[in-house]
Image 1 (cartoon, rainbow, N blue to C red):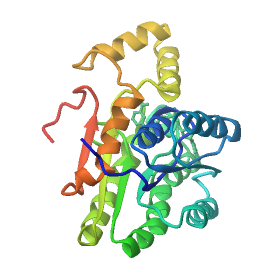
Image 2 (cartoon, protein in one colour):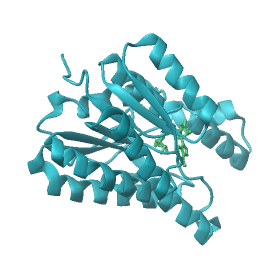
Image 3 (tube, rainbow, N blue to C red):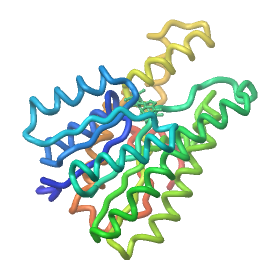
Length: 263
Ligand code: NAD
């Protein structure tokens, strides 16, 4: 299938590793030019180099902390200065810490809200007016199955991800007639650095080895394995494509069947 995104400009936030990196690589495979951001300069430059050497697309790496409104504004301005437009926005970020629900301070809650909810608000607020001028746009939000089915010891994610879905659905209804389509992806357990640290922390809490904890987590997944970042990226790239032209306001999990609910 020709996804129709060759030559388009895709901004993938938090893309130095993990799911964001896999999405950036997938976009490059389809011929989209890229802007990627993260806080860590070395990791970001390394990812940009890997993509540049494997695919003949233009890539602009920008150091940006998604918890800072001013850095999000500069990220968008630099993208426009360099490429002139933004066709595709993937709102990805790091995840909030895990821990017992009552252990988090106001500061922890505020940080998680800024990282996962406000960063999405800010990115959309900057990018949607640009997409309106173009009469074409795709936004894909990276959320979590925590928004559909609360996860043990993950109250920050369980609470704040649901708010991102509220934002995405509301915006999708407001801009659909302008050919700007907004969808959200809920990854289940995907083998990345983040999952390794979550499983290590759980193993410590439960007094088990990392291997035992990972095996137990995997046993609960109907497909009986964790997902790969590429498996999440495949859906993100389709939703960002010309071929997803009648899909907006949806929330789709990529979770090997882990969510037990009907919707
Ligand atoms: P990861 O930790 O492997 O990668 C996170 C990326 O975000 C890195 O590139 C990091 O540099 C960047 N980042 C973190 N904080 C940032 C900030 N303040 N500003 C800019 N960049 C920042 O994570 P991942 O597993 O790829 O997860 C990506 C997203 O998907 C996270 O929000 C995560 O919570 C969510 N998610 C992951 C899983 C999973 O099992 N891996 C499951 C559900 C949801």
